[in-house]
Length: 231
Image (cartoon, rainbow, N blue to C red; front, top):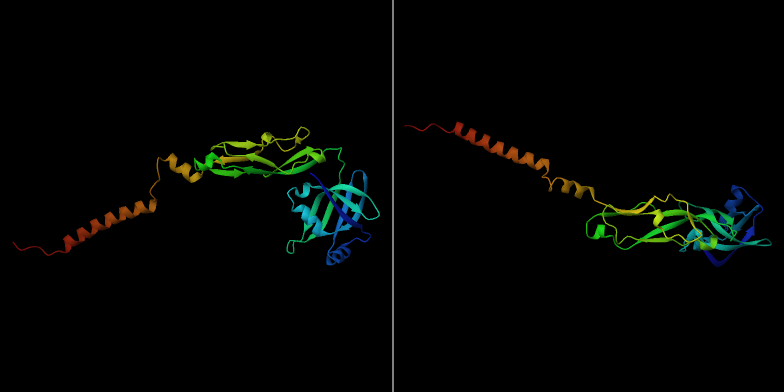
């Protein structure tokens, strides 16, 4: 999805780990701009501005303008990025130039709405199997997400990727039969229904038998120990 955002970038002459480390100390992040049949360009950017885009509703599918000082200004998408696993700051990014006239491959998140009757009435479990699908579409037609209504789903029913509302110019690349979401029966409940009711735990059964046997043995021992009555 295209947004009216322009982020400035500075050309980067030095490369290597040491140069990248110095940039991060200065609060910047190294990046590479490539694609559209042009030469790659090494740049530096502000991680704060990029994080705002990544955390927005359209995320990495956002198309925005990257303005390289003394160079080109071009629409781009964030293709790859690396976060520090501890500090969570951006370590590196890859930007791809976008030609608005040519379709591109993107992954779009899938969300659900509603409460499935199979859960609400039948006591089943809603299981989300696929959280994003891949499509091929024009850059300006990239949806922020897909939303599927699960309210009518009963146990054993689901929604497949083929049911997603694609635009006229979009092509589904994910397998059309891929399950997005379905409602399944809880295994414990299924086992109870199959046996005609809850089974009494085995340990309880053994306890009852042992109690009866103990009482019988106690009665026998009492009779044996009692003195014989005089006639």
